[in-house]
Length: 73
Image (cartoon, rainbow, N blue to C red):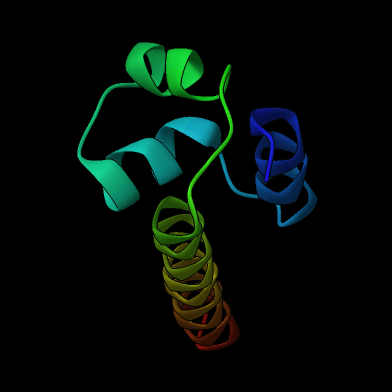
């Protein structure tokens, strides 16, 4: 998959590029931007997909916790 397609996949899932860079590869957003200039291997793509799913899950849990706190006010 091309780097541009990976970028679109990340943004379509409402997560930040820097979040995926850190979670999937342990690198900075600048290094990830350079990585996006090239095609991703299947292994790299799988890391990105797992990171996206984990980030979405974390955000969902945070939102639910916030809603619980707000409803108790």
